[in-house]
Image (cartoon, rainbow, N blue to C red; front, side, top):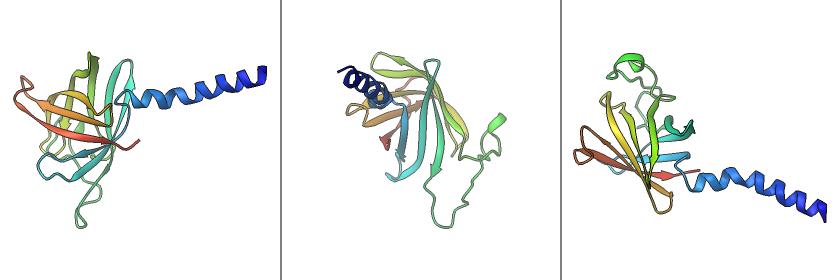
Length: 147
């Protein structure tokens, strides 16, 4: 009987990270371009000290495109750095049912925007909004959970 209880406890501990991934933005996401409707990148969202960060793991590029593009329009430390591996989302903290107070970098134009994330369909999708000033003036993308 003690062996069964120990196995149940170990199984619960092993499954805990998986349960957490289903009720938070932590995981791997495919972002869908709001202009073309096509997949643009795979972004891994992690959490550290209560803040979310998102890093590009893969780009969906046309056949003739540079396979390792650089952020030539970025400024500061990201200037001319590879887009794959770049942290584009940072500083978001849980605020009720959404995550806000952070920034998102658009490597396409090199600009940094205020950002907020709203979970959709029980964290199967994310509405990721980048904006200047107020969320009313901005753009949204849908990100779809991959893992």
